[in-house]
Length: 107
Image (cartoon, rainbow, N blue to C red; front, side):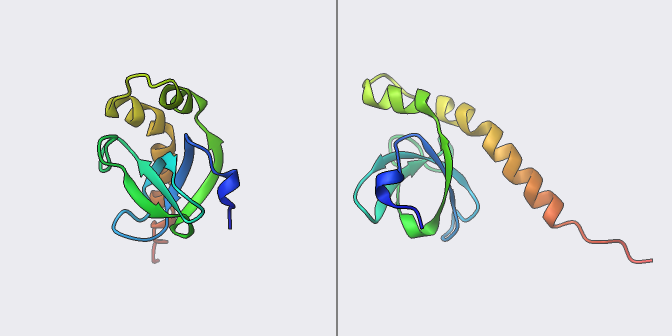
């Protein structure tokens, strides 16, 4: 399991529990050793990020520094920017899901 000290604003995570299971998010803020706020610009907007337990997340090593810099610099962010950042990650997840759910043909 990842330690909170390793988690950073802008890090990519995937939900492994809850209604949003298998969705890709970006860490908006680290709250404490058990919780983070995540958003994806679609289901969870920047105006209402989701509080998630770290144990319910798959943490990736990818950190989007552009997002983190804008958060730390108090620059204007919008949900379209977040969706654009997460688009390549969402495409990879949907491709994996599609390939894993293909049934072998019966002969």
